[in-house]
Amino acid sequence: MKTKNKNCVLREFFKPLMVLALIFNLTSCVEETKTATSSNNKTEEAEEGIVSELDLTGKKIGYCTPSLNAPYYQALLQSIQTNTEKNGMVFLSADGQDDINKQIAAVEDLITKGVDALLLNPKDPDALVGVTRAAKAAGIPVFIIDSSIDPSAEFITTIQSNNLANGELAGEWLVKKMGKTKMNIALLSGNAGNPVGRTRKQGLLQGITEEQLRTQGEIDLNIKTQAYTEWSYAGGLKAMEDILVAHPDINVVITESDVCVLGAIKAIKQAGKTDDILIVAGADGQKEAIKYIMDTDFYGCTAMNSPVQIGKNAVEYAIQYMNGKRDFKKTSFTAPLLITKDNAAKYYDPKALF
Image 1: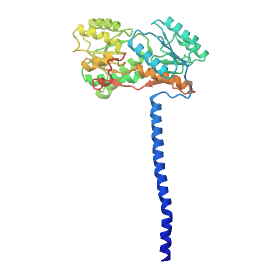
Image 2: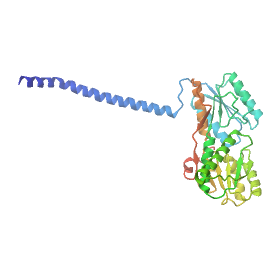
Image 3: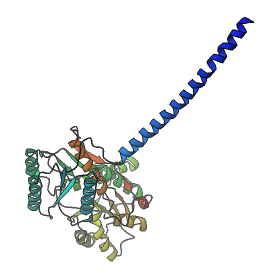
Image 4: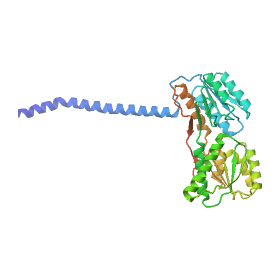
């Protein structure tokens, strides 16, 4: 009896302490939840922008384009400028005006102005090696974007779309679409010796042959002709006019870039062959090409080479370098992506520059 009374007294004594403990635990849970939520929000905010421990105010990003005569180059410049200024830095640009000597002089001018990072889109893979060495001597890191440069150049990394993988996706799609139908192929290229065009072409041919071997057990790669367009609408038009005269049996056109074939479409239409020829591009995802893919059956697919993403990545890597990062891969790719009628509407923006 005495023991029971003692237990009751103990229970009454500890009751307030238990309540306090419960309240403390609940408060701790709420605080932990708040902290976790706050932490998650910070993570999301960090992912939206480029994080820098260094004060970037006044830092100068210099960009030299080979030309501004194409929507792609204009969109790339706009992306670099937007992402530079968004991070409080000064944007300096120079235009090579489609002339290698003018591009060399333009890069030298940016070096003289003391930029903190140089973004360079080379017109020629060999001719600009010297200015990259001059930039290094001045303590300026060089980032090659969109195109390529000779490996002997002094640069941190090359930022571009995955031209080989994109070409392979387009080549595979073509074989699946054509099946056993014999293909008489015309190849429209940019210009002779261009390393990016060569890689895209390699991807297209690899995609075609690998898919033929996988599904048909043999290779039937019948390329009737190759023509250079100088990456222009007018060049594509002239090349296709000549091809249709010399090779009227062409039923497939593969190309290293949308721009190479957009002019060619006019020649195909004038010849009344839109029902007879299928077009496949290894790049770029230009808005006019995407619209053709959406609205017609003769433009089968293209692959994404986003100037917006490449420009953003280039500025981000320059900022990372300023913050002390040095372990860059020699080539940094954006993700490969094939655009077909199934997903074209998702990537079509009529207001885009490119």
